[in-house]
Length: 467
Image 1 (tube, rainbow, N blue to C red):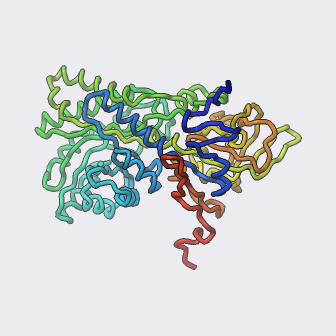
Image 2 (tube, rainbow, N blue to C red):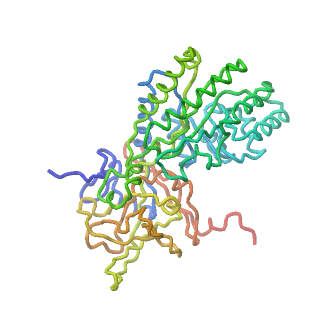
Image 3 (tube, rainbow, N blue to C red):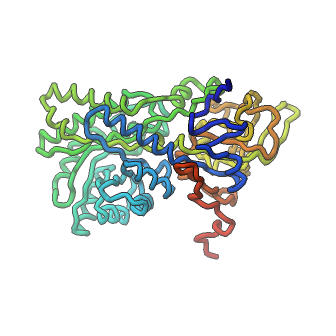
């Protein structure tokens, strides 16, 4: 009996006939038709990830709404898939708001976050009548109030806090620390609420918001965040009589990037624990509610908790493992002095920015020989004229493997696949070195591969230039 590779997901990512199949579609055929680099997404996997969230909400027996963090990937066809799967949308700019509305999300399904909203963006959000504009500072309270007055409309808002809660994720992904640029500090909260509640005809204060950070491997930060917000909510209600409608826990539910742990030993322990985290959304919700209920019982405030809706803003956990990046080996070289064999691909850090900014690990396999033992070490790098365009830690910090393991005898023309590349790749890609951005394919229910983003042409590189 053939043993499935450790990276495989039955019915989704599989080694068949020696090759990588994605939802019953041969990856080598997709590469032949569309060229590489090529992003491939699974509609069924996105829906499965959303269903997992819904099951978690059903288990806690409390009102919960999920707002997909579109910054993770705002490709229109994928936004539509998320909408059809039955959850809402969180945006961080006027452009993301525009795309969400164009994708069919109703205004009452949209939350707007961000630290530096322009007057135009605020006007667009107020005019659209979205569910909540999440306020990031006391100054922004005055700004949104002024825009609401100028428009003759009422804005629905929530206040975002930063309560100094750390996680075991990358520092750059932790957003609840005082070193973070996000939110209003705990010492400012009551004054911020007093200011926001001063003109209820202009601002409707619906909730309170916190985001502990992305790829959080433990439930404790979520529970601590919820308890902190709950305490502030009680204080606001006791002082003003104003009852908030929701507590927004943000995103951060992790994805297991190390299903195949063959190279996990090459990573520091902290990286292994973070990248290989398997935290259940139901556990996050249960821990958060448990912390709040304990506090509510002590204060005889269960009635306030019962009226609250919990909001979550999952992004990575919806889209990351639904996408793979196919790339072709274009060149090979051997360093006689070191014995290293270098593979040069056509996918660089302009498509995988997190691999450079956070030394993020994406598991690499041979799509052409998916069933063969991957035991030969290679130095792997991309095509960019930049020394940092490599699949290892160029600063020798050990946060990525120095070598990637693939079958023996890889040659130019072999197709490789980087797994779990659905989040923060397409959304961040850029045409460095004049490299046209790649095509994106979505495999629909029933196994039909549909082009959802065409590959850029050279002419596209000139868009908006004037000379």
